[in-house]
Length: 539
Image (cartoon, rainbow, N blue to C red):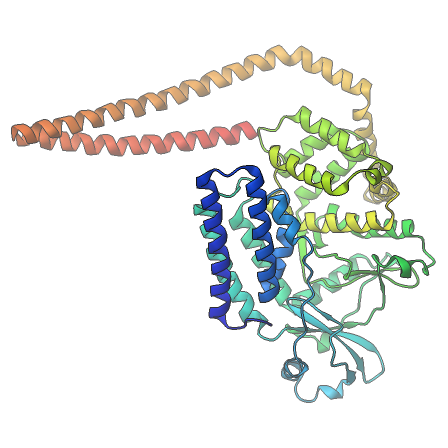
């Protein structure tokens, strides 16, 4: 691990972010045009990427997560960090051997016939080595990098300070995401990934969950040889789904592989429970027999029962083309802000879903991606913090499927998989009802009903708004009167001091102090009331 020295890491990271903050402030003060801002963000992204590769550790993970946040960060910055990989140089074998001996004792040769000294894979937190047990079984040995716990804790302290500083003092877009909540969630995920005993439990949970799926392989684990720093698993050989040349020699078609991926990940996204949060091409392989191999369960997320219900409704709405219902689900999930215009969002969803694969092949996909990012940033759309890792999982698998079958529509591939999943869940009639609601005759019925009820709803809204306006006027009048009383008190103080009359200036001081305190309290109540009314409007 590079830059183990804590002072070196702290100084390099703080100097990086200090320069970034100063540049942003300078451009903000000088009111630079958009073209200049794009160039600045490009330079910031380049410097950021170089520093991540130099320091490694937690910073690589952060860079990977930020690269998926096109809704939060400028395109020029995203473009510089979107090719970040989790491959870093492996540690010295002597350091790894010392860790293994400490975990197993000096007699670990009693269990192993051989452990290769060259890492098969090397990431920011752990490394994987191939070993052979005494009985001839090949295994994968996952070992935490030397001193990684100390490095991660140092990085978390630095990051917490940077997030506090950015959240309070830096003029960057903060409306799309809660930095504090994101930091808390990131900390929980990384700390879980640092404890291999947690990963062992997750592997056992996933093996049990998908035990009836014969087209999926999840490695077995050797609990007696595993600790919080070492994880010993079954060795599974597979081909990357991005290796098109090697995939030609597999009996299963690429379209069938895409369907298998859907069957594996759709339940993870729609059912309450854990989901694989890092399914990059190195963690999702295919065997020569055409089975999907799922590896590395260090980074996982969790879906609540309530969110799972709305996600299921969202998928049903897309498949039945009921975009009004889709917008409603997005509202409940928190993806749309209160001021969103539902009709516009419905039209955008309809246009986006109507894209055909043939059209996409003829388009400049990079330009389309940049336009979509700009659209997301201009619309009242946000990505709730609790869905950052779920979104990463979804986007990664969607990208793998598009790469596997670029001529196919992922929604059409997913539709039979989703219907099959619905039948297992007993929700088939829910989908049928969604389809009926999306039909023109049903929409016409709703339109007529809404039209007939419109006058009554308008009157109710007018009455509610009048009450709100009346209450707002009361608060504003109180503040105005207290401000005038404060001015009167200051005037009395001045007169009392000028006339040297102690009763006048003492009484005026009392009036001023009382009016100032009352003004502050009134302002606080108004602010609290306005926040409450904003929440009421959302509901």
